[in-house]
Image (cartoon, rainbow, N blue to C red):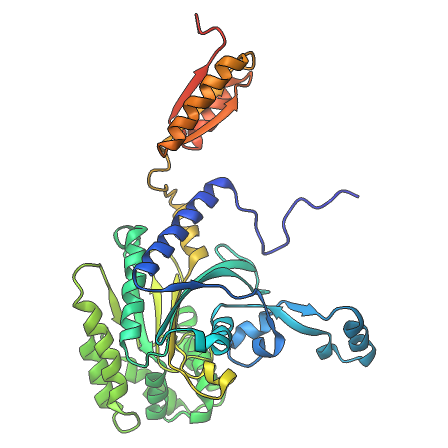
Length: 424
C-alpha cells in the first residue's frame, strides 16, 4: 500500500517561496518587539487538559486536539467506560493560556512588569479554509503586572510599528479598532439585558458584521429577549463616532450603569497613541467590537486591513486569568498578530522579501576538473564571507530551463564555469 503524499487535512507543507517570506516577517517581528523591550520565551505545545477546558477560551475549547493517556493509564481509562477519562492533555489552541500558566509558575524569576514575546504553533480542529488552518503560527506580545493603560499604548505602538515595517501601512491601510468589555456590559445594562446573560448576548452581537443588525435582532428575539430592549441597545449605537470624544460621550450616556473611568481610560489610550508622530498609527473606537474569548476583562482591540475580510490580529486585557492559577489576580494584556493571514495577504499580492533578489548562482560544467572546481568554490566562499548569497550547483543538459528556474527563485546573477570556455 502506497504512503499518502498529501499532508493531514488542515495542515500544509511550506514551499521555499513562502518559507522565505515567513522568515522575513518573523525576523521583523522579533526585531521590532525586542526594540520595545519584549523578551522572548517558549512554552510546550502540549497543555494540561483541565487548563484547556477551563472555560477561558470560548468556542476554541470545542476545537481541542486531545492527547490520549498512555500505557496502563489508557487501559484503565478504557476499562472505566468513561470517554472523559481517555485523555489527560491536549494541543494548545492559543498562546495566552499557556503563557499565563508559565507566568504563574515562574513569576518569582521574572521582572515586574514582565513583557513577553512568544512565537509558536497552535492547533484547532477547525474547518479549514483559505488563510485558516488546523496548525498555524501565532505571534504574541503580552505585558504582566501593569494595570495602567500604558501597557495597551505600548502594545498598539509596537504592532503599528511592525505593520508599517512590512508594508501594511502604505499598501493595506490597516487600522486598529478598540473597545472595552466593560463598555459592552454597560451598554447591555443600559438597554435592559440581564447581567447574567452577558456572554450569551455578546455571541449574538458579535455576528453583526456577518448577518447585519436585522439578523442580530432576529436572533436575539428568537432567544427570548424583549424587542424594546434590543431596539434600545441598537439605538445606542446610532450616531456613535470613532474618536476619543465619542468614547467620552458614550460614557456620559452610560454613567448611570457604569463608572465614567472606564470610558476615560479607553479614550486616554486613543489620545496617547494619536499624539505619537514617528509611526503611522490609526486607532478607531468601535462599540460593536466583542472579541470571542471569555477571558477578556477590559480593553479589547482588533487589526483590520483594506481588501481582507475579518481581522488580521487582535487581543485585549485579561486581568483574572493568572488568578485562576495562583488565587491572586495579576494585571495582564496581550496582542496577537494574525501571522498566517498576513502571510496569505502578502503571497496573494506577490510581495517580495527586500533584498531577496541579490543572489548569485554558480553553474559548474560536469567536466570541470578538480583545479577549476576548487577555484570556483574558493570564489564562492569569498563572496559568502562578504555577506553574499551564493548557490553552487552542477550544470544540467537543459541549461535554459535550469537558468529560468534560478531566475524565478531570485538569482539575478548566474555565472557559468566551463572546463574549456572557448566558444562558449
